[in-house]
Length: 131
Image 1: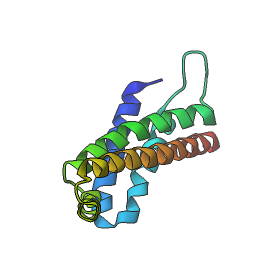
Image 2: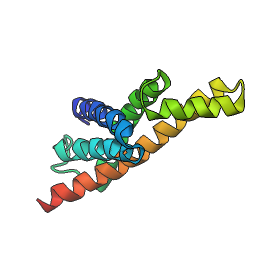
Image 3: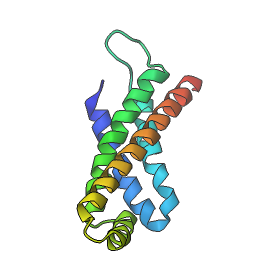
Image 4: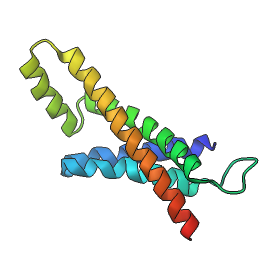
């Protein structure tokens, strides 16, 4: 695997998700999708393989989603983005459950980014095969 591409696309994932979620909350799905897409589309394959298939694209997209999800979750927990507002309202309703709220936000962000990065990786391989 080309970890440079995966790391850069994880940063692209986070860099797109944070501002798009501030513009309109449903747009946050575009960052992980695009990051996973780029990770699989820009990769050239492995040592033994000439080209990558959908499974390889899914793996590369999911790694990109995990890296981007960690960055997004940390930025959201530190107070940037629309998710921090949601955390404030949830923790106000729960009382002293701030640690639990932060943990839940971290886990949900990571899972959502992982799944959308995986889907973007598969889409990237499909597009690459068509061209």
